[in-house]
Length: 487
Ligand SMILES: [Zn+2]
Image (cartoon, rainbow, N blue to C red; front, side, top):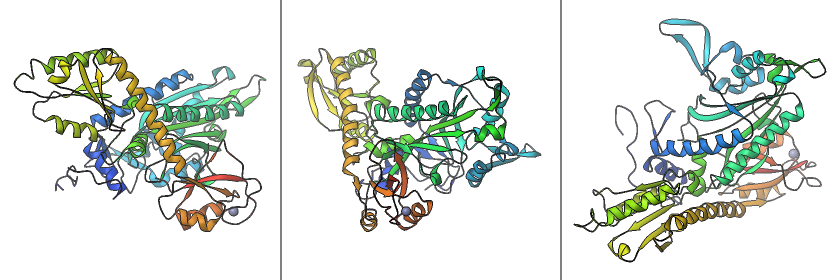
């Protein structure tokens, strides 16, 4: 620990996952050079390797946002106090986490500013100016930004005071359109998580007590981490006319009457990087799904001095160029300061999906060695048609990671109608527990107080709770809820 910054030194070893999952997570994040602590309490530094993952996530999301008719814009970082205070429920939800700006230079501000914890209020204010007629609707805007929510505990990527995210804010003519938009964007998140991150998610509705402050309904996607805890990976909110009424976002309807718009907002953040780490990682460190891996293939030339530079290296460079030409992200690790064994270990730890080894003997036989990170299987592959083979293998790794994560989630999802059994299950590393619930906030709160488990969501699909009795009070159940201990 250095005195100047209080930032602990980088770990040299990774704590075994089985020994201490939390320690393992932090070790992987720091040792794989994804992120680090900073001299600012609660704030992290996202290092280039971690930021490259975020950029790939952004691309995957942004492509989907545009394909569903959304456009990007940018709104101010600061929000005047009076704007935030307009929506009572919203204020109460965010007040404990808000950072204030009280002074600019040497002048004390007449009105305090908050650093945005989310942007409904400032965006709503602008929409009120931009919307006059039904012809101005819908507004489908997304913002890529940073937000600040004061946190007492720091967990890299999972809980930090400042984080990066996107927030979509839309305005519609009718309640039906807003509801369709809210669900559509949750569907986009689910598709993104499963296709790009190989992270299976449960999509459903949040309970009243867990919904967004100021929303009518909140929907979420929930993933299961390898320690049996759930992670909320994205949310989509139907704001109804709440913000429209407060911010006066009115329009002349088709029948000439004056109406308030119906709003939605939806967001995912850098927290998803934490989700990827905890969904796929193993004792060897990080495992990245190929679609979001900054390097999908690392080439390690097997050094045979003195002819390395004349023989192996040119061949390795030619292979790199061939793979890059095919659109594959490749890193050729030609450092002569490290041994091949050291490089194998390093890139395994940093989660590169595929390692390509090539030495003098391989060149003689017109072959290379491919080693998969997920299964650690090695195979000899002919250099003829190599790019096709590698591309196919990356696809199969992507599929295998998703299948493995689905299997893990299914193995760690149980059903019970008995509260005694529920409590027993929640003592270990439970995963999801599906149980009947009457819909009362008191039962939900009591279960949380006694077991730490919260209702993650009520899935859109799945059997109803009709005919069952509430886990906690024994009254008639209305739904089957998915409970878990969560991040
Ligand atoms: Zn109950």
